[in-house]
Image (cartoon, rainbow, N blue to C red; front, top):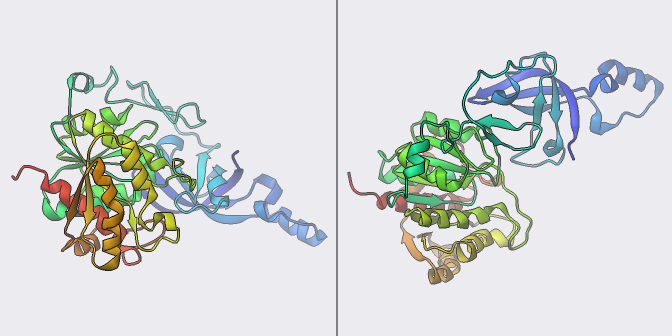
Length: 383
C-alpha cells in the first residue's frame, strides 16, 4: 500500500542529473493547514501526528515528473519515509499536479521500464529494433574475455573502482546496474560524482532499472553493450542503491550476484567475484563473509569465477580466508594484497558508506571490494 501525502516545496537542497532533493512541507490539503491546526488547538481537538504539518526531505526524478520549484504543490509517496528506511528514507514526488511537465518529443523506443506501475516510463533500449545499436547487439556473440566484477551491494561500486584505477588508471570501466535495488539510476549521487571524476565511463541500466547511458532488457545485453558499444575494459555488475533481505537463506535480492557470474560465463567473460565482508555488522549472518556471498557464489553461480579474498591482517583476516575456502570447490579462490588500497579509498571523490558505516567504521568491507577491483585490473593485457 502507498501512503499518499500532499505538500508544498519550501526549498531546493541540491540537484544532480535526473534528480532534485527538496524540502517539502507536508500539508495533506486543508486538513492539516496551519489555520486548521490553530483552530483545532483552540478547541482542544486532537491532531493526528502522522499527518501533522512537518517538513521532510523529498526526491523528485526530474525526467519523470518535471523540475520542482519553491512554492509548487506536490503529491508524495511517504511509504519509505514513514518506515524509517535508510537508503530509501525519502518522500518521493509522484506529481506536480498544478504544473505538469510537457509531453516528451516524439522519439523511437518502446522499452517500458517500471512496467505497469503508475510511473512507468518508455525508453529506447540499446537492444531493440529502433536502436542504432541493434545490429551490433544482434550479431555480438560474447564479450571477449572482459573482466566482469560482481558485487552484492551498490556501496561496493566506488571501492571496486578505487582498486581498478589504483592499478590501471587508464582502464575504461562501465557499470551494469541491476534492478534489485533502486530502479532509477538517478537515485545514486555516487554515480554522478564518479562520472564527473572520470572514474566511471558510463552506466547501463538493465531489467526494470532505468536512467543509464544505455538501457537494455537483460544483464546479458547489458554486458554486450558495455563491451561493444561503450568500449569497456572492465564491467562492474551490482544492484542499485538499496537492497532487499529477509534474513532467510534465499530471500535476498543479492542472489542476482550469482546469476551475473553465470551471465558473464555464458558470454565468454572472466567473472571476478567480490565478497561481501564485514567486521562491524551487528548481524552475525553478515559478519566475516556474509551468507549472501556464500549463497550467491556457492550455490547460485554455476560457472566458475575468481573469488577474491583480501589479505586482511590478524584473526579477522584468518576468519575471512577460512570462511571463503569452501568456495574453492567451484571457483578459483585468489588472495590479493591490499597495500595502498586504503589510501586509494580515502582519495575517492565520494563518501563511502555501507549500511550507514563509513570506511573507518568497516574498512574490511571496502578493502575487500577494492581488492576485487585490483584483481580485475590485473587481468587486463598490459598497455
